[in-house]
Length: 263
Image 1 (cartoon, rainbow, N blue to C red):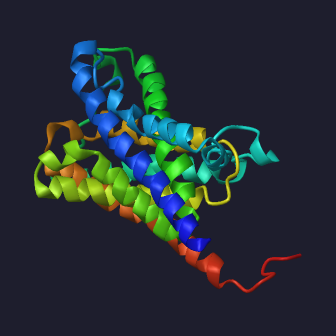
Image 2: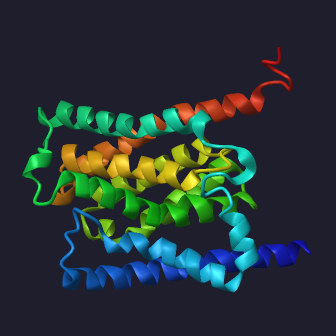
């Protein structure tokens, strides 16, 4: 029975990841023909959603159960408790990244939203849609799937590793750029995984909101699109610093005696 369960979760993960990678590559290849600017939305972001949809066709009952906490109203419990500290961690990461960058370079490459080719309001909405296209796969499907086999910290780190590797374009730059980016995805995934560990509803909007704030912060305050390694190294270091309180909190919760804090 255990062997069968092990095969099932591996099959779900394999199908999801295969489609997520292939679909992202195909969508990235056709984007230039659509004329949609990548600063507005990257079509590759819908690769994970395609992976979830494919898995749902094969195992509808299991995938429905896996996604139960993605939308509002499930299990009668919302995300109000952890939402604020989790969402505030995203601008904290950007602020730390900018501060570290300024400490080295003397200034931060600020982009005025009015200077962007497209409406900033449009970019915000499109970025949220794209982020949710990713997060339906990473935090709403793969994270709960891996949690059936691993603890929250291990599952979160594994999702972050795969999430980083899925961004294959990051590995076309200098090694320091790729290392900084991969460090950031693992650290941010730990923040998201631990922050949503007990969230049973609205997971998609919460994860998508965090992801959107990060993307917008990088667009406006970090010169990450240039391919220069320093912004990504700072981003990775900032993400690690921001993840530390979440990891320490998780460790403290594990060593507290039963009934601690009861009144």
